[in-house]
Image (cartoon, rainbow, N blue to C red; front, top):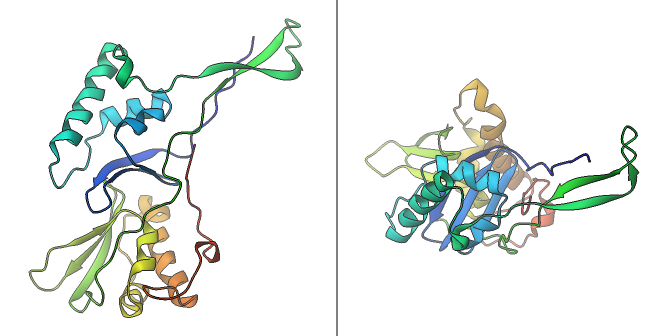
Length: 226
């Protein structure tokens, strides 16, 4: 019997509770997955949840339920997922039709996972309008997968985990980002440039807060399931 495992779409970089959107997001190298509830995260394959258990959840509002959930899956990972309520998705065997292993003359099987229960409508954070007047620079944070905007004055840094949020910025703010190259380490170029390219796309396609546009006009890959 031969087994084949469905591959996930990219390494997990971080996971975060976004209080403004009341949801969880898992940031991957190839995109983002939004989850409406904490338990829906457990619809991910067990190996993805095991990775989350080893990463600190980004919980800047210090929501106690989010912290408890993170602690619980860390505990369940060590215990071997004993609690059925906190058990992630494990694969099922599926026979590959019309295939035989040439050495054993037996059917070949693969491991199959159901699509995770991600949000069908991807949320966009409501952005401040024309708030980059004191813009100093922006950098890519490899630890969290966020673009961080820094200001000249004492204004608090602004962080965004999803490049698509740029579509909700004003045109003047988009021009600021377009005109300034994001700072990053060489190894993080691919991830950082997703933010830079989004600013350029929005500028070229006249996409900004208040404009009439459809998401299919942007040639940006979005991961909605694995």
